[in-house]
View 1 (cartoon, rainbow over the protein chains, first blue to last red):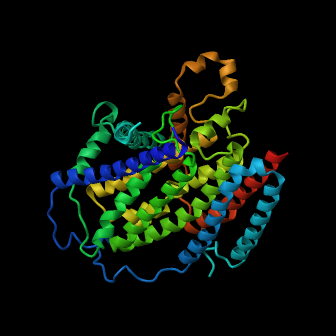
View 2 (tube, rainbow over the protein chains, first blue to last red):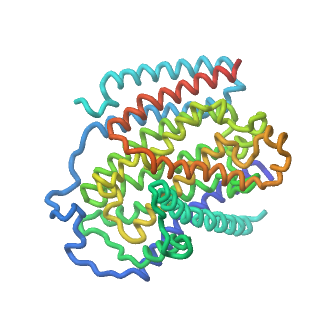
View 3 (tube, one colour):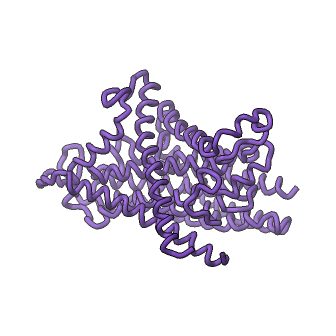
Length: 126
Length: 332
């Protein structure tokens, strides 16, 4: 079979798997719809807070640390994405790839130590 | 090969694969309760069937007959969407995981990237459920969980770069074949640092003890899925166990040689080659599944600041050191 044709069939198979896995979830919900009771009343539909009536809305501001972690994550995940293709062709490129990637990691490490110095990974101190 | 035939054969393959997989998942919950029970000098489930062997089936039936409660103040659409995202992300990863030579639904050449990418989508299920529930426990749980999962995803990804360096391929079957070229038949020994990082981040990625802060029972009740009931709750539960199986399979394939037996073992004990590859694969997977239960029965929970410190200050530098060492050894 042709290369691109083969590729197409493989990704078609993945699409089928994804559709089936969504269908499994839908099927289980459907069964629950049939068998499960439906007796809602206002108190049952309030959010669970250990018996105390809920006072405020939950959709509020939260700790800024979570945002910072998300930003640092983006940087390091991009690093991982760059490292993967490098790892595959590493043997072919040889010493050139080694030096290039060490430079890349070194530049990232500067950012890492900057974040470390700014107490990004320290959750106890302000 | 025409398309209709292809669709048919893939559907049949997937149905068989998922059927067996879900049976394994159902019995993993039973095994967990038994193992934890015996660790704590209890017997675990004993009532339903001999030694409680029918317990998972009773659980499924019970969950099907439960009421599906959707809180009045919740964001209805996202609330309903979240369990699907979790479940289908966890299930779809198995499309590329080979259980034996050529026993795989789709043998794509970027298998490892596909698994990591799709498994990463599971984080959305957590964010959606916590946000949409409009409950404080769920919200705090999902925030914690998201920060934890994205932190450890970096370490998980970096720990596998060493494996890719050794195998020079993303294809999971190719990774297994490459390991068989060495006399010890596993990447476990040259990649021991990578394996350590992988195992720790695998525990954190699947929200298991000692890193189960998102659902810390004693403080957050159940974390991000506290508002879910009935079958929607069980979809999250299923997704968690599927993620455990996915990570265990990945550990078995990338570090333990998948379905292959170490050549040195075959040479010393020739009768071992009679045992089919799928049995070896399952043994390696179940070792890791048992590791999850064992650690749950042994270790206390970490504090949140400790968790973040372990991820960013220990695991990521360790993974980078592993990459540097592996690439140096590879070129020499």
